[in-house]
Image (cartoon, rainbow, N blue to C red):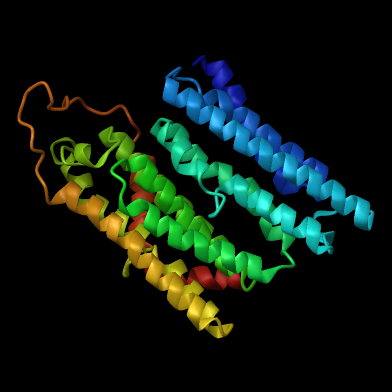
Length: 348
């Protein structure tokens, strides 16, 4: 892609998210979300592969449907209450409709069906943008909204953690596994949103760091399914040794960074008297942990079965920058001891 066009599209992505962050008016927030969608579509379709075009079409249709619902709900709110302020949604009907529209935008279960399919059709770089940056603007709106229906949020959260765990069990494609991982993590964030927005922000931040590391590892190895992971030991042995730690951090295993948000969320849910919800969420984390363990096993404990020269990957030095990967990997593995400091910064 022409670097000038790429720069304009990335600028559009940044501007769309910034407009949504800064807006207190529904129309402006909707406009930011639309700019976001329109800026990423050429990035998704740039490889002119049938799967990429199909993924782009699916993404465009779901995002357009979510944006139309959002606009309709905000107009309904203006009609019922006479105001367009984001934080002044008092009527339950537009509040519920907006929550569901934003859930469709970020891919919360049961409105998640598009996400694994779309991510599977994209390359890893665009998939990384879709899994991280594209979640920020809708999340900012959900945080400001503070939906009136707390039951709806708990249902969305629990369904997402369960489906995110179950859906990934049977997958062999890494991008689909990462999509289900994303759904499960978003479920945890939505679960705690109404009780402690600061913990939701902390969870979002750790999710972004861990997902960034995972995508960069797969990109460095040029891996798109489980079988190709087995050849990674020959390309980057040190990274192959660290990757299970990144994956287990995503699964939320102590003493890694990913344990911190899960621990704080379960603690807060128990404080709020939602012990059954906390138990179900903790059990659903075991499902996710299974497929992360599967990836770790495939990567470090199996040797690639093919010895044919034609199937052996080229041992060429990678052109990918390793500084971002090194930084995010260190953060993915080592931040748990800083939990008290991070909590004090965010929760105070």
